[in-house]
Length: 227
Image (cartoon, rainbow, N blue to C red; front, side, top):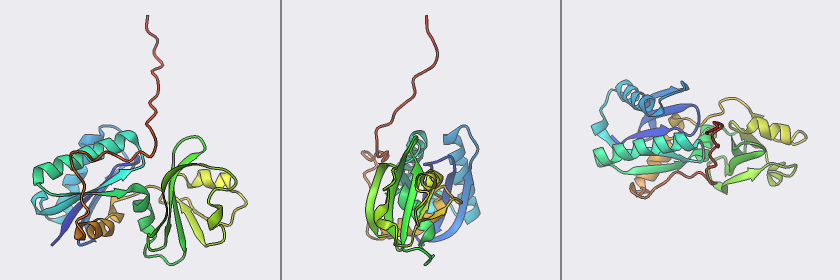
C-alpha cells in the first residue's frame, strides 16, 4: 500500500482525501465558515475513518500549494507540515490550478484546459494545460482583456473554475467553452498527481516551503477610527 493524504484549502471549499496508489479510498469536505484549522483536523479524522486506516499508515502528505486564499493556504500548509514532522513522512506540493484541471483528465472532449481562479477586479490566476496535463503556460496572475487566451481560441479549449464567469463576461464573442459548475479544486483530484510525485521522490523541504500566492498579499486596512 502507498497511502497519501491530500489536503486542499485554497478556496472556501476545504477538502481532504486519502488515496492508495492514486485510487480514492476516503474523502471529506466542508464549506462551513469559521475555525478553519479546527475544521481541517476534523475533516482529516473523518477521511481516515472512512478509509478504515490510521495516520501511521501514510507514506506521504500532499498539499495544494496555491494560488488561492491567503489564510486558507497558510492553514493547509501548516497542518501538512505538522503531520509530516509528526509522522516523519515527506511533503508533496501540487499546483492548485493543476489540481483544478485534473478533473478533466479522463475526458477527451477538450484539447486545451484553462483553469481560472478569481483574483479580484478583472484579474484571475490561471495556467494552460493539454488534456493530459502537460503545461503549456505556467501559473500566472492575468488581467483580463479582449485578447486573453487568444492563442487557444480555435483549439477546442474549455475555461473553468471560480473565475470562469468573469472570463465569460470579458470574452463574450469567443469560441471557448465555459464550464461554470464544479468551480473549486478538490482533494479527490489530487491522488494521481501526488502518487506520480511520490514515485519520483519529488518532495519539498518542510522547513522552507511557503505557499505560492503568485502575487503579494494585499491586506485590508481597518475601518475603525481611533482617538
